[in-house]
Length: 447
Ligand code: GAP
Image (tube, rainbow, N blue to C red; front, side):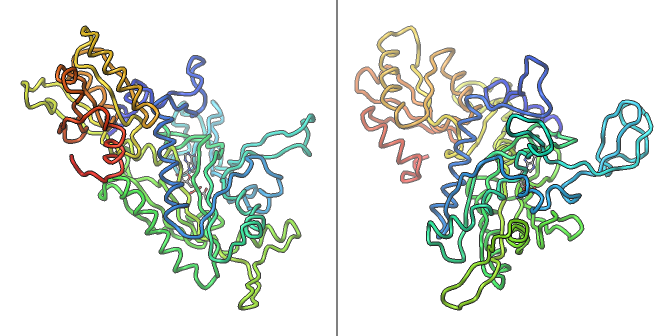
């Protein structure tokens, strides 16, 4: 299983998905950069989530709040207190810190030095705003995006004339000074969250909790994640986040074991009542019909972009011993196929001239590339044998390979090959934009 992990990490680097940050300086504390294919996939993932929240649900609106906020936000939210901290033991010799529940003895796993008693280390990242570096100028990089949503609860309510129940969703960066970041992009210090906060009447919290839990699980399944690699886990009280009255984690079976990819939380009135108390602003909701005034309860769904992207990559990674080609003898090589859902695949269409030493074919393929480029993320590739080029595209999940061959010069048709089945059909070049759009949105189930 560890082996599978290193194969995925290697594919990500080799094919331009994910690179270590500031690599020429030896990298930087568990930060990663997304390369040309990684950023396409990341954008597709965010688009799939945003579309799900905004288009597939009633009464959910979007927001994009600032990362930097008044530090009082973090006092009120409880993130500056002991609840948002890791319990760590420090080595008295090398001063490395370890999560208390991950070291079995009082000895440093690295140098065998003596470990201190565990102490709490807060995960908030401090920064300074303005020209003076003093206590008054301290604020924090947000540790969860949802606090920006609570800050705008009233603004959204009033400007959009929303009525309870309704949701606000947001995608954005979050930062945590994780002391033991690990497992590639699973636990990192700078990451993105996709969070939705559902404001409802306290009596309806349980109903909506179950509703959103189911919706979120279905989102992964609808995007092609294998059912057997997903599960939900009810988190017992003593392990829950400090704000959660109830917490269900959606877990994925990574190469290194079952791990959380999304949390569904019943936050009760923790956030709105605390922000009311700390700010002096009454954030209760007034129901015109029932004349009732109350703090709405919050059901939150919170998923990490990088973590879920990693889960989708792991799920899609497939190795085929001896290759899939049936027309020629099996090569004994291992072929890699990345079976990502077509909505998540970074490249939708590859355009390939059958050979590159025939100028008319190359010219045709370039024309097809220009024709399709405004509609889809495309790649043009003429290097190497056609079989090798198909394999290169399969490895990065490209959905369709279009090949211009000698018949193309006679009748202006080319072959469209589908990644997962390798089935092919001939299509007229002029019909390609509409044809591929229909294939992409499932109007045609040809393959
Ligand atoms: N607002 C609730 C909240 O932040 P969380 O369980 O702490 O809840 C939610 O985080 C999700 O954010 C996680 O399920 C995970 O996908 C992602 N996440 C949290 N910390 C992360 C980290 N250090 N690296 C990558 N993703 C992280």
